[in-house]
Length: 141
Length: 397
Image: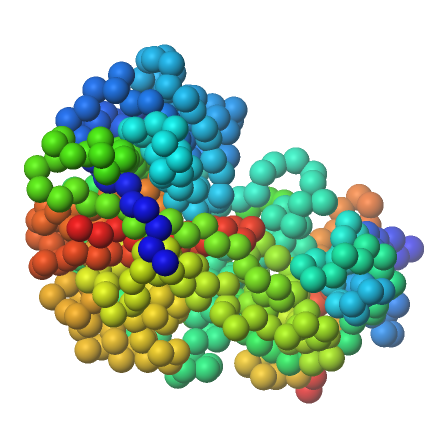
């Protein structure tokens, strides 16, 4: 029996393995897109909107910058045992004109500023509840 | 339009280190040193402005009253301010504004911290609504992760190299060598920096600021109160900027998961970091060319180079040249971080923006010893805290 797959955070991304998307939202007054979703008020200071529609973000973007962490971060991060260095990328989405972070899936090969990456789902850590799933960026071969 | 000024009567610090004592003890040492420097008694102080620490329980959240009680209740008015790394500047601003409003003549500003070992971590518990908690949980995005994004970006856009970043550390280590308040007082070579362990690629251990215990205090007064109490012209606070970003902020900032979107509204004229000093220059009625010395927030060696450009010392992409030409070294055109900066101090969050001010006051008075910047008359601090807190203070003599 395979372990249950649960999102590591509720409502931030779709669990569709074949075409996962980060789920932002868009202000219905000014059109500004937010990720994570805006929930209280539109953060465009010239807009007094407070209603939003879901806006799945582009699933491909280009690396704006990235790093590989060589030391285990503090809790609440759940590190692999033994600790393995992991990479985090800041990815620019052309259509949304924003930069969004994510861990990097599949090693650092081909990882450079400007590289095209795509969104994938990956296991962040596993516990009694099952596999806690998070979005990651993967270099497009 | 230059705003009205207040006088700095006294400054004091408790040395930075990992002393493991109660933060209140450091604060009292710094406060008493600042009072002695001002030639005032604690009972002369009419207003106490505390910069909070969030790592020392309830007394840290009410730092102003905590310090007032430790020094002995004497009826002063009080406030406590939190603005992450900019807390000290915010506390200073409140004191300045009280004085300028005529509500008091003389005020004590104090910030102190005792820090845990290792990475600064989010507040404990299970808090999935807090982006600062979530960025650790979901991404393992430590503070150095963000510093590393900026460093690599600088390499990509401007061709900066590992050697450039290492040279910043070498410079600051030399500056802070004999600073009695600095925690790290040791020269390092470029080779030592470049062979120190990689933390967040491309940044190495010796290029990332540590967390420290420490305290800094400043006594401010009205110009009128200072007259007759200070021989010669006092150092004056000519500006305190406590800037927030403008929408859309298109640079990824701690602790965020994403930038604002620039799809519906275009990016502002100035980036957030550029706007921090711009506001201070406006208040003080001076510009970058008027500066003699600056203390900037070198959370990483690479970030110091960004600050050169953000405070207008040079155009974007020219910071490495400024460094190589020795302009930002003591003896150069515009020395940056003569104290040794965070590279020699490590960060004691609520004290750090005040420590920057203390250093500039010593510089402008000609009391900085081996690290003196000759003839310094105008100095600027620049600092940025988590959750959109920028600060910049300009002092003049």
